[in-house]
Image (spheres, helix red, strand yellow):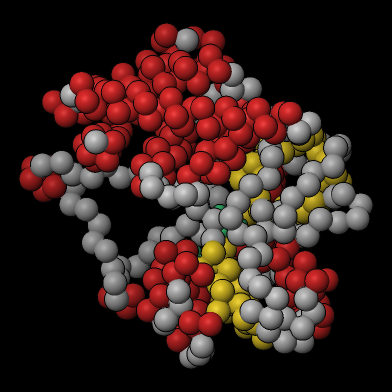
Length: 399
Ligand SMILES: NC(=O)C1=CN([C@@H]2O[C@H](COP(=O)(O)OP(=O)(O)OC[C@H]3O[C@@H](n4cnc5c(N)ncnc54)[C@H](O)[C@@H]3O)[C@@H](O)[C@H]2O)C=CC1
């Protein structure tokens, strides 16, 4: 029941989301203050989270995901009253978007499901509060280094200890872009001095990444959420593994390898570091240092050729992966741009990697979500993008 109504609502996602926020803010004007000025990215996130829940209904990991989401929502000061207001508006939006598909049974199923989701999220939040975890961590910027025009490495000192596992990320907020939160992976294993490092690539038009790369300076304070994420070490000692990262996807991989260099220096594996151009291989020095500490690690650097599009590096990576063997025996840790992850995952599965052994974070797609056409007329007006199974046949990606 949940899936069939969601399938209808999803096709009208744009309308459903607009209705949801209008309903929420109209009925609870004070709630508008909790959201950023620019609501467009926020609108996509709501549907991304809903889609995750609906596609994972039978997954045993769903409860843990929701508990973590609730823990993370403490940074928004989300109260039980807010959860209930969101529930009413969500149901109103679904009823509006589902039209004739919104039957009494559908309403009952969604009311129960939302109640369950809210309970699990609130339980996660309560558990974290009872464990003495702050709702967020204030962290002072102690260093800000630029690499090229678009990249910065920030070193922060949280004012309270920030426990995390290598490979995890935090959400970051800056007073320069009020109430906006963006996730960045922590680029090192926990350090003795308690500092953490973020690698930020400036996204054209991205207010937060621009503020962090171009404006933020030592002495400033940023706010960090509770750490989360699925890209943590899960290979048994002695197990083979491959690390593949692109751009600032180097950050979590560096954290994982730093921990491995301390805990498992005889690790056997391979590392592929992909960047759009040579000058963006900012992690090379650290990768070389880690290679010395991990003699069983082979390291390959891949970039696009000068003057070529940045995604040529992905084609070159896929060629290199095809030249490697024993994929069925490897755990793969993958980090990079949202469109890079499914492309590489598909190639790895073709090469014999067990999909359950490919680990990466779930990243929201960049850009506006696409509304799937509902009727023949809509399909004609906006034909869906084809799914490219043969990478050499695909259309060029965005530069
Ligand atoms: N835990 C994770 O998975 C992490 C993910 N990231 C993500 O990685 C990205 C890093 O951005 P930049 O450093 O600016 O990377 P970038 O835009 O310079 O891209 C690096 C490489 O990724 C590949 N790539 C980029 N777009 C692609 C596409 N549409 N299809 C196929 N391959 C593509 C290309 O080989 C490119 O050379 C951000 O989107 C960030 O959100 C960053 C850190 C951690």
